[in-house]
Length: 114
Image 1 (cartoon, rainbow, N blue to C red):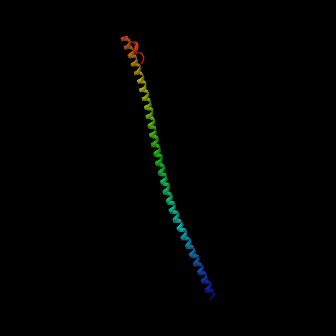
Image 2: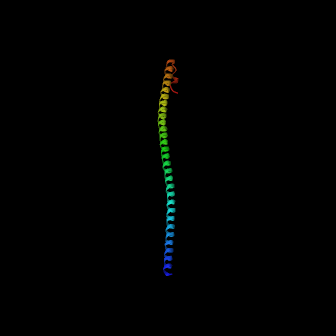
Image 3: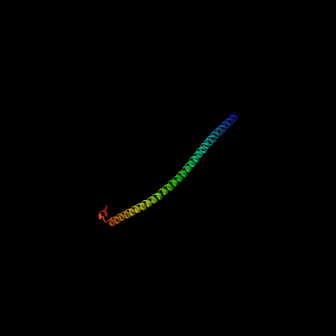
């Protein structure tokens, strides 16, 4: 009687402890799987962010290079404009001198100034 009843109680307690431990193990296993998935998602997100950063850095370098080309072209254009202005001024001076010489040769001093 009493010994059997006590043993049955102990067996039920042991079974309950085993069920609780299995439930805890299952919960831990579920949590582990969830964390693995979260880690995988984080790694993918980080990898995408690194790729995006590399692309942006490359784009910035390309834009800096294009800006440098534009600045060089602007400097060249400024030099050409200056050279053309100087050439035009020289041509205007030569033209005035040629007109003055012709006027002197023809004896008409009226065309000295424009």
